[in-house]
Length: 81
Image 1 (cartoon, one colour):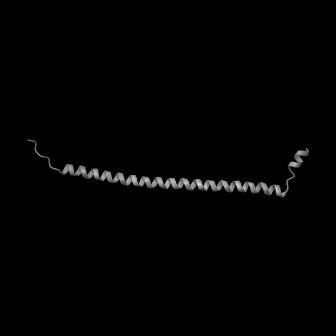
Image 2 (cartoon, rainbow, N blue to C red; image 1 turned 45 degrees about the vertical axis):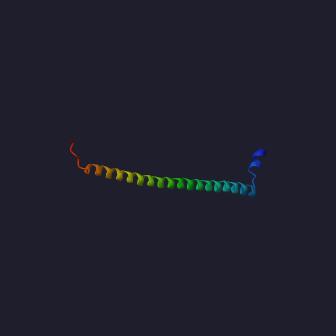
């Protein structure tokens, strides 16, 4: 019983140390989460920009292909001799 009695005999200093330690861990965790979030958002932004570039490239290629096909269709057929 004596050991349990000492367990509950914490003074304000002990409680303050525990609270400060919990606050430090929470603050560090918050900082790491914010950093991870920024990194993920940066990667997402990069990916979106790359997707936009590829989309523009593909649209340009499709337009060129359509123009080539239209040009080929407009050329009159020469009679076979």
